[in-house]
Image 1 (cartoon, rainbow over the protein chains, first blue to last red):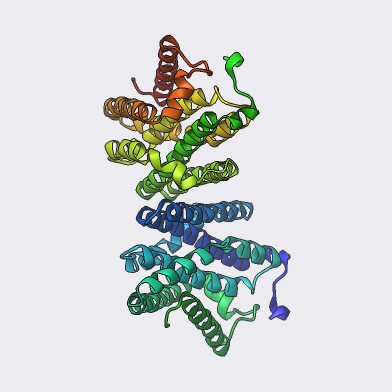
Image 2: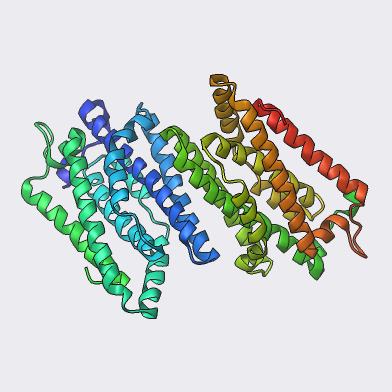
Length: 231
Length: 231
């Protein structure tokens, strides 16, 4: 929707600025929580090589986080205050989807982060160019997806029976993510205005929101297929 | 000891190369273990700001680790095989010094990493320039010490009674570190040759080893003083 893409001078609009601060705070806290979770997964790694790979994935999140924190400061926002409102939803997501083992952790990293990234990109595509570029670079997975796909496919090849259980796990991740995403959008006016519009700013109508969820689901199905799992 | 500093062509000496691989493997596994421990400490952080600081410290270790792994590959060594012999000593150190709370974790990060860094620098000072520079850059703490000193001093100012318990903790860290360091040197011929010499390569005599331990202890005392703790 290029016609409604805001320009950089939109930051003089307090509502727009506050919505961007919300989005960056949400992504920043998401990265910090992902760091913690990936670091925990690293401790479950079956080999030193896997442990190093997970440590690399975890520390990539911190690199992204630093850039988001810098930008929040540039916008005159307190990064901690910007992140705080999103702790409950993100912490709940992680509490409700604690992986029982190494493979579940890998799938969660791949499917969960992929889904979050798709959602942030959908919101980001409606923002000014600078913010959009920052959001995109924060979501760069630095080739870590290939590592996960390799490990999960190998595990299924070794023992095809794990595929059923892991497919179920993927569905549970999707359900929990959608439920927390809905909570975030409902709680934060700024973010919901970005999605559904306000007086001056055209938003997505219900059909467009439906299409967005359709795209999120399609991408999720593609990721599960890539892993060799039913969705 | 500039007269005995090996030049870069020493890598044609299999014993020297293997000692360098040992040292880099030791430091690399130390960084990976430090990453895991700092990430665990991050989960104990009392505030989001502290959590971000610890996540930054943890991911700095991974940045160092990547450079060590690259260099090990350049030397034709398998990084995982180079790290493996040092897992028992380093894992034991961490098992025997699991912090009971946030402050103990901070002190361990500062005192333990400082001690390890001093020891690696002592060994590194006897090596070729390239290896020495790599060791030094791997041990750069990126200003994280200042964060720890600030937090510990504040905690003591808030409640001076914690100082006694934390001083005891510092002594325990020192004792455990020395005991594991001794084990590492005794187990790995390559490393002990670097320290104590061999036929062609002059090493440290007993007096010099004594001086080295004297310097390690002095630096430890200085760090404890900086924290506002008796040593």
